[in-house]
Length: 357
Image 1: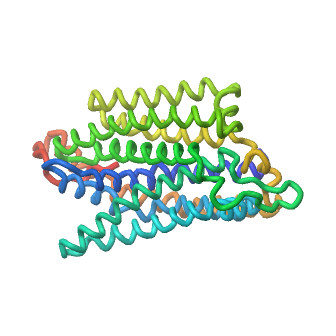
Image 2: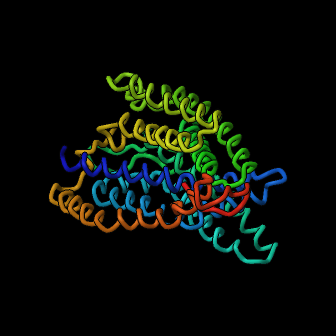
Image 3: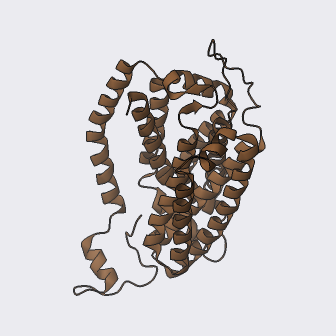
């Protein structure tokens, strides 16, 4: 594997980890917005408890992806930041507002809590849509360059203000909401809450399926490179079959209340969707004008970058594993208590616990 492709693979892996972690956090904000029924407050509390310990750590992967893009593929970074600066700015504002609101709403004043909770929820909806819009605009070939000079030929709105990018944006929102609901079925200690999020997960799965189909239909008209990659390559049919099996398996597991299996299959489904987008436009960074090889920094820069990534992973990966074990792990004593094993009883529904994702 050449250095440019190796860095691109790391970039896609970083985006995958961001989607599986940070994306689910955004989805939690969606369910905070749509919390209803007699357990609405408990639903919001569960979302906050699930997100609280790890939401800042999840953004590490987005920061890494941005750094990799502007260091390894500076021409592509400049073009994307220029042509898509409106949705990117909205996405950045959403990330900042969401994080600030999540903190500020912890104050005791009811009016302050309600106001910041609304901002948190709305920002959690807008940000994933803008992320998907940017991905859709790139996949559709909306960011065009002059082959001779590398100058951006696209204006500030035509690349993204189209049906296909917004279909991808809504699809992204549905996937994030689906992930969050599935994760929260595992997080929930109370049977009623678990059933609330089970129903939400099944509804989000249906919405994601419909939006996936709509995005694929629009891709045929608006994203020819992506359409060809998803339908005409040797791996296309096995890829779609595997993604479909993961999606069907997640729904079946939710239906039969096998929540941990549903969580694994839902994460696999979302990862395959992201990988399909990346593979469908390979070897382009910005189809149809800019390939990985043409956009890449010199090999010496890429080599040093890969070495820095390897060194950083020695510190980063164990730190994140430890963070998740502390805040999302389940102590052995509690596991025995939950299962009714010797030395403990059976925890009552709704009693506090630490069964985390």
